[in-house]
Length: 280
Image 1 (cartoon, helix red, strand yellow):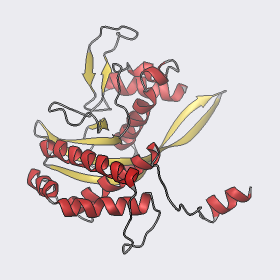
Image 2 (cartoon, one colour; image 1 turned 180 degrees about the horizontal axis):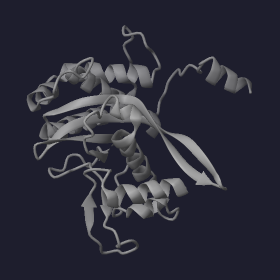
Image 3 (cartoon, one colour; image 1 turned 120 degrees about the horizontal axis):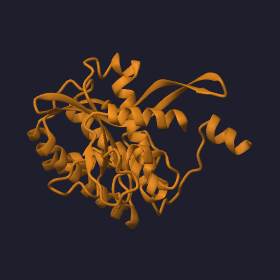
Image 4 (tube, helix red, strand yellow; image 1 turned 180 degrees about the vertical axis):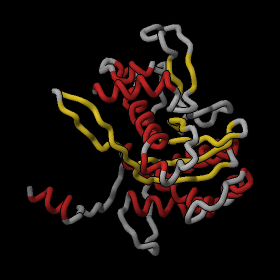
């Protein structure tokens, strides 16, 4: 109880004299923070600038600027220091992780240069919506949502499309995409990593249909696509982070056709997802 009080209520942390290793969670946090700093710089304080390919290429060439961003991300997420005057002193393992993170950030920028121009709508912001369902003869309402890594708006065939982008620094997906109904089957949690799909679909649905999002980032009711950006795969020339699903009627089949979820609001996608979520 005392540990909970000091840690969670008072916000106190044990001082780390020599953080030799960076675990996966901290590694991911540093990447997220660095990516956020990059796109806040490119997009402006209020995301007022459309990000062009030449903006991203200039950032790639600015080695000193990327070093500064990496140092800030390490300072805040590993060393837990807010003072901008603090200069991190890295040990060998930390330098190795820093080099890998730099490669990942450059990979992200190169991929985004092929997608630009685009507008940033939100970075690391929370969005919520209410879901109503029936259980035991009563009407229940839950508030669902969370922190979205990145919302951007691209032009697709001359029309705007919003992407809900979730960064993943871990191992890429190795199995084929599930059908929408399979997202809610416990047997596929490990084999198909359906928790990723559940998170991405939920966030996309909130941005597409939620009142908070309609009043702020999606006033025009633009189509919204769920995207998982696995940074290890982002080097491929044809890489597209927007998720696919197995086509309806192909559940359980090894050989099946797949469709890209360019809009979570597609009837054949949203209806099954919303029903599965209510059942869950």
